[in-house]
Length: 107
Image 1 (cartoon, rainbow, N blue to C red):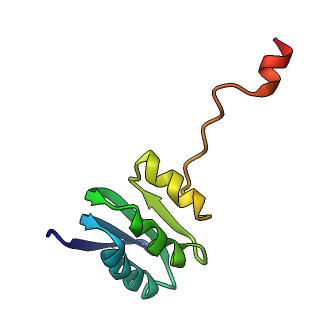
Image 2: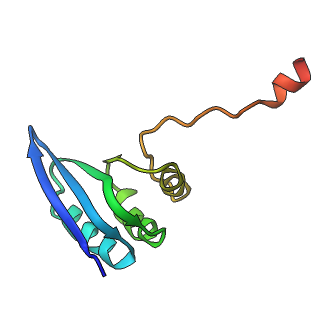
């Protein structure tokens, strides 16, 4: 089983945690531990280099992300949506609906 590597990159008062490997419920706990040590700076979680991202990790990660502002980067649309279901803003503007009821009634 591949694990998870957390690479920490610091620059100008912000810390980026670049995640590589497999993120699941167990490895998400490692990410939570890393986040808990970074309470006094801006944090970016970079998911772009993950090989596998299990849905169970979203539930674990949201426990700490609801209380603090963490920028999420490199998420697939599916995982962006899952974070929003748990009340975590992903920073990505939501796309408007393909059509609205007003469009149909006013046409």
